[in-house]
Length: 254
Picture 1: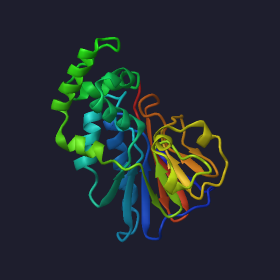
Picture 2: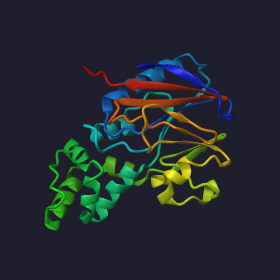
Picture 3: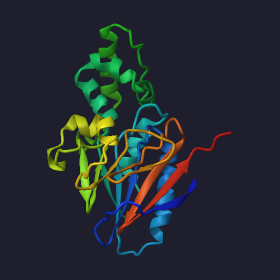
């Protein structure tokens, strides 16, 4: 685990008396999530007991990593005591839900790491060139294996949440469009138009979706996807007043 690092080159603040820990894309990495939550709890102990403690998860809980089911169960029922949690939808959750409605979309999901998610629920994925009947059979087995609490969790995930000067969303927002008029597809999938913009967005956007080895701080956004599934690093940004700190859990590799 790395030491927390302060970042003060973005002018924004959260409401007084509130501390927010926003967590990047988890992608089935339950051990990294648990390690990061321990670090968040240890950090929060140093604050006043009167602080409102908020966790925001920016989506992409499953796929690619080994324990999608375990990550979702942790988010539903076993987060640290005393924290208010907001779990947002990511594009990978959207893909999963689309597959439940239309099993022919399994080929698309398989290209985005479905094998790992299905395996975590005890389902063997067919090949992406299998007959449609195999896709339907896979969907039916997955529906039977997916706990009702997990399905309700996935179906009810919001696309975004705002606190103070910060707006939290999975992928980003389209510049030039007010926050309250953003389209679902952009909030889940946008990249270059958002990432390359230095336009005043009316808020600081905290987002995941686009991984890199380190968090990214720009004049209008903070990217916190540090590639848990590929780089072995899961990052949170702590927002307190007008200060920002990064906390990171890292996979131990030989």
